[in-house]
Image 1: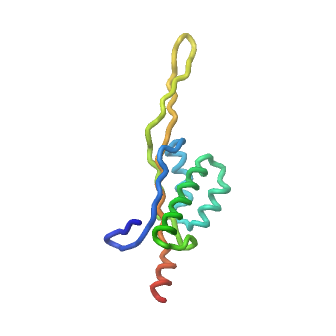
Image 2: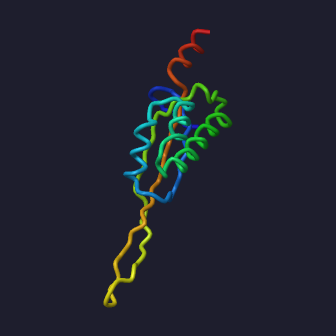
Image 3: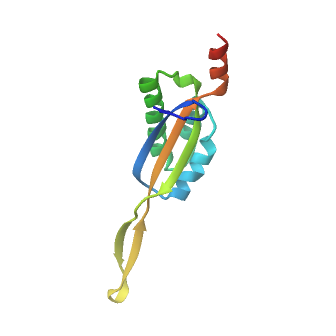
Length: 129
């Protein structure tokens, strides 16, 4: 649980470290789900034709579980507030080529971070009760 000192909004986060796949390809998917509700994001991830949706779904479910278990928030009211993919170290491999040469192959990895927070509509309705 993290509380911002300026706005006092609670949010939960989860990180996936050293995920195989380039950060740019993961960002392509994260850009689609950023700002959406948890349920909408899960539906979108299920039907997207990209390989990176598997690890992203896993990190998203972890962030929602953190919000539910550590902060007592309702998963139906959660919105993805922050979703980033940063570069991680590349695994270096070599491919044998003709005449004794070797070509380098970089197998890229990335770090995925997702933060979820209660939507502003649910926060306003709880405050008015």
